[in-house]
Image (tube, rainbow, N blue to C red; front, top):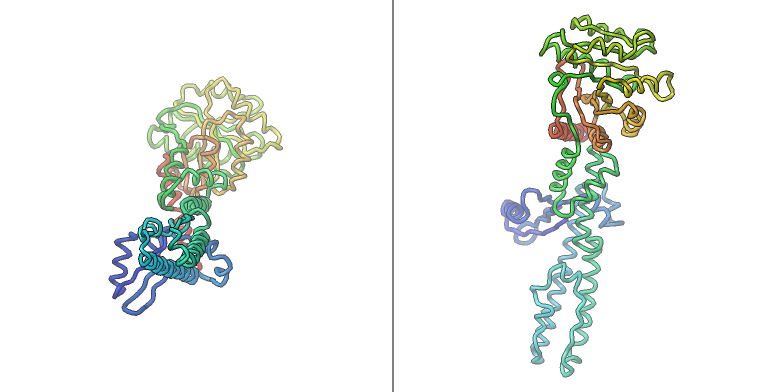
Length: 431
């Protein structure tokens, strides 16, 4: 965080200085009238959490962001005042030394070297001529003590090594922002650590680009490529509704004659009803896998169809028939591309658990559902990035087939950013 104080005769002139020297991203910590005009204290990459850490006990009295910013500004004023007094003392010593006729100490303590960084790191021992040393050794000792004090003050304000601390602070805030986005702690930290230097906003954009690059999607749509596709996932994830959307989408483009629907759910009473409703509306045949009709037998009969969509039972590892159903898909002599249906409203650990539960079916991708019901989408994007499952489609409503969309990584990340902004706006209004 870079803090700077500006003086001007008017507020307009002060703000113009801030804009010219600090840019449009500067945050005004405080403004007040002083002799001859106004004073503004500003900061770049200002972060409240970082400010509280630097201020320590003094930050406890700050119950809101504006008071915290004022405290940060007061600390900066004190530091600048200390720097000013030290420069005056150094000037006095130089004048006394010149009076003794000795060599100038400008090379050691000249104004050009009096930046905060120099004061924070300079620990030079100055060798003086023996004839003049007694006259101003006391002043030098006092000056060194002041420089040491200033070094401690600057170090305390920056929390250690200035450059490294600034990088760490930006990385920490970036990780927090990525977690607000919905990413897990481990992934958020991994992305933030790759941002070595620069502003928080630059790191945020870089992380979003890396996230978009890490989210895989399928290039072609199923209706164009054709083949056999199965949807697996827990009850309530949206498998059957998604198949209805896919089927309607196909019929609108190619007609019903080259499409067929299949269900392997023979474990629940009336489990086929919704799929049969879709079949009747779309004029598409629906076949049921049972004790007398195996999956491969049915697929053999439907081999002339361009697209076959398979609905499955939402079973867990403790349910009867769970392993049988998944092995049936994995061992078929037909090329079945099995996709996991993941609800965007699920918790990340639930998503991971579902993935472990169904990966024995040789998953080739996933479908993200209920995008419209999720507060944030980072959980879903983090899941597909960590598992490597390509996203084929996502759904964001109940309309058939309008609320079905072919997935692309950049628009998905952009949608997630918009969702985060919307959530933050709602929270701001609530406060």
